[in-house]
Length: 410
Picture 1 (tube, rainbow, N blue to C red):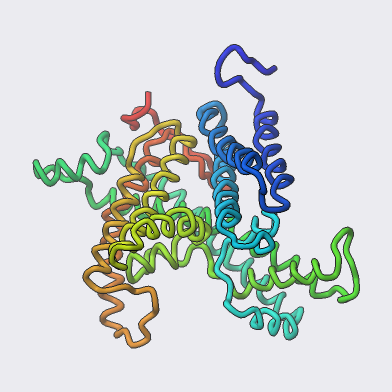
Picture 2 (cartoon, helix red, strand yellow; picture 1 turned 30 degrees about the vertical axis):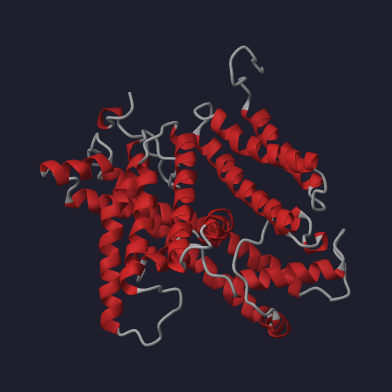
């Protein structure tokens, strides 16, 4: 039954999910071509706001495992929609902008020249694809075993999570000399972050396995054959997309603990899925506001704006997942933005790989970055660790925290 006596109205989860998905398809229908009127622009913007607001309004009404995918899709789709609208607004010619749905699955940086993909398409064999799939399956199995081991260790070694937030404890450490954390908490948070990375990485690897199977099927087709409603040219585009995903795309998590610099961590090794969104919606607009200032200053503002957007996004997700705001993710991401600015102010920009970098210098940089990561991790992990129920679970057990260990929940 749907109750409208309270706000928000109580909805069965299936109805809630339909209420979330329908506006998405409405947006697709209204974005087959760039909007030509202010009313069309306004309508599309309202849909974006609706998609972002719906999970927020219904936070705490459903289980974390139910609401989490909805929240992830909300910001993922909304960011792509905002980028599409931005490009429509600034496009010199309407023909430069295609339908929105064509941009839905293009989030990664592709080679500047597509000859690499075409060349690989002409030479790719079933044997090579089979080998790629087997390697992916083996990697998924190894990551899954490591995930289960780390998850089991976390559940059997739960520490007392400090009552105060990490920024407050750092302030007390500076002003009163009270330690902000201990060695075991450092280890626990490092393993906890590894579990989060492995969980997200496994989902992506599983998708890569499916991508490989689809590619194998498409390679075996006759070039003149059509499938269902797909024409030959469309099949060709899908095949090239699968090849690019399998062979030319970086993994969204590239061993973050081995970063050599803050830029290496955030540009090459951590959650590359969101890189384009932060660049298009935060970095470039903020940088362009100060385009008349020095290049270094305008880029500094752009970097801090990108980290601010990331911080707000994570606080948005925490508010939906945990029904609680702590400000710790805001602290974590803004601190890393400041660290990146200071690092590059001292060492210079590291956007391009230095082929002449010595082994000793690389080891030193990785060691410094490891220290930075470990001592900032509490700001990222503690909001999850305090919650009585982990929304990431293993295949063998689900963990529910003892409420007596939790100072933030009653």
